[in-house]
Amino acid sequence: MTGLTSSRKLDHLHLCARTDVAFGDSGFSEVRLVHNAVPECSASDIDIRTEFLGRKLSAPIFIAAMTGGHPDTAEVNKNLAAAAEHFNIPMGVGSQRAALENPDLRDSFTVVREAAPNAFLAGNISAVQLRDHGLEWADRAVEMIDADALCIHLNFLQEMIQVEGDRSAVGILDTIRNAASELKVPVIVKETGSGLSKEAASALFDAGADALDVGGFGGPSWAKIEKARASDKAHQNLGDTFLEWGIPTAVSVFEVAQVRKGPVIATGGLKNGLDAAKAIALGADLAGMALTLLPSALEGKDALFERIETICGELKTAMFLTGATNISELANVRYYLTGTVSEMTNK
Image (tube, rainbow, N blue to C red; front, side, top):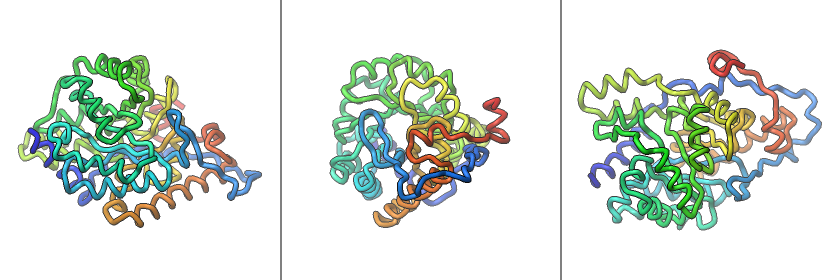
């Protein structure tokens, strides 16, 4: 299983980098921020600094989980970590399962802390693996990268389509509750492409989650990715059937914000700084991006730095055009919802 887990991580990275793995509409095209024709501020005074789980950040951009667990992924993680350090923004690593199963693969993760000694880093383990292996795995995941938080990910759509997937969700809330009460770092619970409803968010906050990452529909599609990996017709057909499954990211952020008891991260199909601004206006604290950053991260550190600079510039432009001089003001900017997002939110 160890070798299988590691090779799967490389499969996922190659598929995301070389093919179009995104599917659906995240909903941000149906969110329109209200233009302020008299913003009464200077663009040079726009301040995008924020706080997250007690840490001061220079921008509300989260480098969302992408990779790790195979030697060939180390360079990408190194570039991403260098960006997190340079811009003082948080970063999450990909699932650490492969390195927990095989310590020889730790280097693809430990390189992150080496490249980002001061950045906010989040470890990553699946809720199923945590349930099955206990808190020892969580502690090892945190120790591996000297993490500031641990992401516990929920990926049951992927598990159902993945040939070798885990197909039991029994005991997941108790697992999260135990981790939240026992771990020495905050717990972030994250979906991975199907989104969080307000009911699920309420249950997760009640279980002790310190923050939630909505991981909504409209970004990388794990149904599409696992369909591409599957060699049998049954799992390929299952991937086709459930391609449109999930809650659009914009809708998920809107719902989770209604029951929030902690920070909310918007990931899933955010493409630029304008999407980040819309996510914050809808109720997110951070805008998470993975697939948007991956091509630049594969190209090299300079390309990645330039991409993040562009995203921050787009965010500042959106803020100036709404008259919001800081992130708190952006969170209260008025917006219009149209189309499916309006229908789904009844707004």
